[in-house]
Length: 219
Image 1 (cartoon, rainbow, N blue to C red):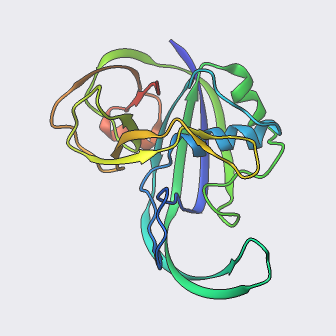
Image 2 (cartoon, rainbow, N blue to C red):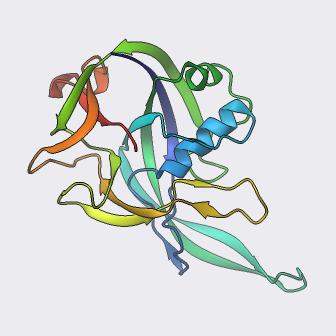
């Protein structure tokens, strides 16, 4: 089977835990689907609302750190504005591979309309490569990592979190399709296989020593 592989890199990235308000803002270890569809919308220059996911992905980071950040808090009337300093986690030296069979999605990343971000406005991402590759289809997956898998249909020993699928194009924006997902970090190791649609990317040089990387088709 042939798919398009879009390789993005960034110095920093941050994926905020949804509905978490505190003096410390941790980052998810991998992006939710809403981040992926946000990237596609930015590359297209128009709002992209998926009828079907049409993507798989793998995310890897080289480390994690904490920074101090000034935020501005205001009331709806904008009459009372004050600053505050919070601690925010962020990821370093990041690699993101997006897989799709949709040629239009792959094409728009050749010349993105808007800047590509992996989180905040300072988390700028670059397109390293867009390639059409041959992959090996699989129905039993044992080498997933750096991705998310829906909770309930499968059984995995992994962290679970409620994540949005995408956001509306309204003001204020509303998250849509929020549901629980397994969070598979970049060093995740399977204890058992799962019966799920996916494929093996054996040509990805980043995973050459591991014999390739398996990708889960998002449902």
